[in-house]
Image (cartoon, rainbow, N blue to C red; front, side):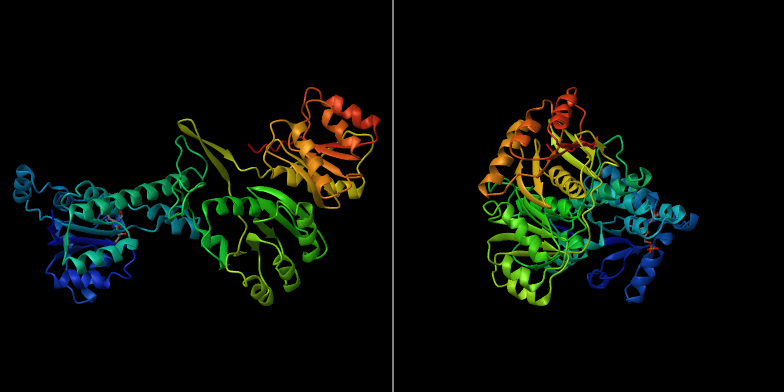
Length: 504
Ligand SMILES: NC(=O)c1ncn([C@@H]2O[C@H](COP(=O)(O)O)[C@@H](O)[C@H]2O)c1NC=O
């Protein structure tokens, strides 16, 4: 049923972009009630407006903490227009009906970001505004609720297209958004009180959901809740897909572990090629050489600005996405020659405090795996040489970013073989060795990382057969000694970090 707006209560924090609405309401003869600052804004536009204090016959008190919280306001919003007793009571207490409520809440989240002064933050917890939104949302059958400045344009459209009349579908739509606004607002407040730690309930409210073309597969829906623009400037290419976003995240998480000039190639969240070198072009070539076959259609990432020479070399292969902290202008020209590539300039690191996973009828939450060991224990035949040490450290980081069970084989800061997502560690090693063989890498003198301990000495024994001389692993198996003894008697280095990096 169409309903004409005859009266409105407006109480907004941000007044910008409200002019047209106020003027339209004025032209349409709508009675407007308003609070202090908003009232002044409306009157300055030359539109008539009734002060809420005049409606309630009560002043704004406690420095504005109580201004709209009054039965004369809430009665007019909550009264069911098809309920004779409600209407009778409105008459009895001289309460006018309110058909439209426009609120923009105190900016709580922005305030938390801009100050640590508790009192300033607490004062930005809106009480009256949220109550108005809830009341109008509850009575959506009769009342239109505009709960945020983000909806001014939608209201303006209704006022223009329909001359101030709304359908029940319009009002229900506004109500749905209204409760979303309140829920998000309350989650932000509770996160503040919880110091951003997980509470008793699982609470997360991420605004700005962007619908992906589809989910992991075309028959699945997908939505990204987050703000890509905060992290990247998209310099070229189409919209990122659901799977692209997953890979981009994996790529960023990996590359930010490296300070030296490093290039990596990611496929299905796993790193298939990575190398650190003196120059970017060398790093790129060494990363690609690690597994040229898998690199096809991959996500490429580096921690240095892309120069023209490297861009020309990268351009020779087919890739989906290239992420870098910057692109030289001439490099960009080279890379933009093909339209189907996505080029992302990364503005800031990807920081994620927690990870979530839906399981059974709930959600698992854990800290992100930002941990790294303090000091390793030498447990093999001899201490690692500086070159072995750097390869072991490199391999350990790479392994942390591979799906379990994972093994990474590294030589001269280049990934030369990896096995991941395997159901046994020994299979992961076999696969890593096969990959190294496929691209003719000599494993003699290579370093091996394992994401978790070795339950038997089979892995170190196979590694030894292929010339691998240094091993990094967390340790912690009941039979650690079997692997340790093997290394000791076969002149192999073994270091134990005490920190496992499963990635299920
Ligand atoms: N206390 C109240 O009764 C109350 N009623 C409305 N507000 C808020 O006051 C603000 C508008 O105030 P003003 O019109 O004075 O600029 C809005 O953000 C609105 O959400 C209130 N403020 C906080 O709760």
